[in-house]
Length: 289
Ligand code: SF4
Image 1 (spheres, rainbow, N blue to C red):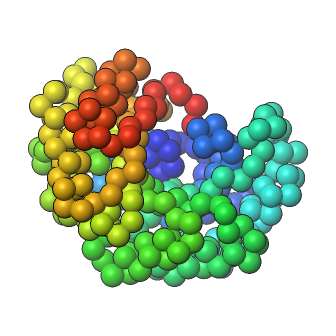
Image 2: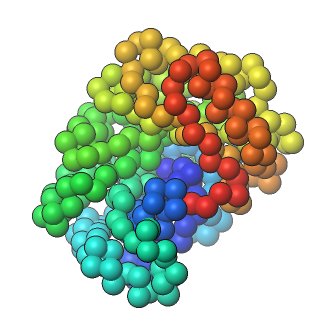
Image 3: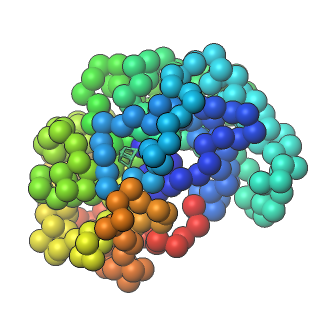
């Protein structure tokens, strides 16, 4: 899953970094340090709106843990010391945004498909502790497809112990629409079961991206079904703290995909809140990252 909104195409390289990339996030009010666990750009979904450019191949194919941790250490130091704001890309950062907000596991694919997911989460959490950054959040941006794998479940527990937040993507109410948007062989039921099980252990944030497909916004029936799925997760004991409603903000994979208008995003936010009682927030197509 790429970084907000799910898959915003921030340049992944900072200076010579291969795995760690700082991003100014106006939305979160500070610098988010992204960690890319999918440098090969492989994903187990093939979302029609994905903003990862897969027309070119990446030079970096595998995660090198030592290199990744070195880059993370340097980047955190660069942000906390304020030296990053001497860099031309960050020079114009307003004073109130000159702070480290989070470390985000996102990138050019689904981070939980990385085979040493639990190990890397533990190592990053250790590093954060050593740098006395206990208050800094660790955010996992995920499609929830692998939560049932033991090493991923362990990684989620490590996040829980280290000021973690899980942002899980769910943007359909029916199997048919899920397959149309996310184009994966993984059954919709598996995703719903994974989100439900994870949300029983800790509150999750849901990331939902809605769009026009061939000019058509999602139908009312689909949106009602989406709300029904959210309600079912809660009825099964799942805690959902927020639903982030997005639309397409940057060039999508498929040319037949286009953003919703702000008013359409607002209408989905209202529907979610009215139907489910879960707080929801709008992120518009042209909004800042
Ligand atoms: S989950 Fe979808 S949007 Fe995220 S990286 Fe994979 S294909 Fe792209």
